[in-house]
Image 1 (spheres, helix red, strand yellow):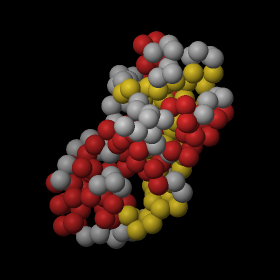
Image 2 (cartoon, helix red, strand yellow):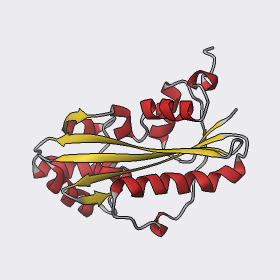
Image 3 (tube, rainbow, N blue to C red):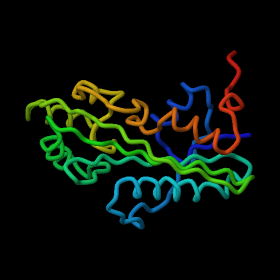
Image 4 (cartoon, rainbow, N blue to C red):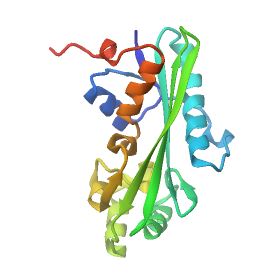
Length: 197
């Protein structure tokens, strides 16, 4: 059975590969502006499910995983920053604070007509970094492609003091949660492992 990732995220695909799953990446062109929820868990779960649903018709015999992440800090929900200026302002708000990174996961099994939707939440403790460091980090371009304005598996990892919860959830896909979701649908993770050459 094929495993399809309804995302063009390189980081998510690499996480799956590290876990032994060679996923087929299929970018979901779902229009996220259609969903305007203010609860972060409901938002990411709904977006993850919608992204997967868009891709399912192309892969009716596969398992399809949709994911979506946002950072909630001081009661505000943040996805990817729209511009470098927004990224700088956001880091000025985030530094020295604790944010919560929510990743919604929707695993659809069209063959069984079943689905499992779960949310992973990880607390992220940000370092109290200076304005020049913030500006230099934003100038690298890395924060502009990340929900929450940082990549823990990149230069952004320098500015995260501590995580409480799942590490891979912050990269965009909780591997332990995926394992639980596969089990809930009656699948074993080992069925998706690729033989090592």
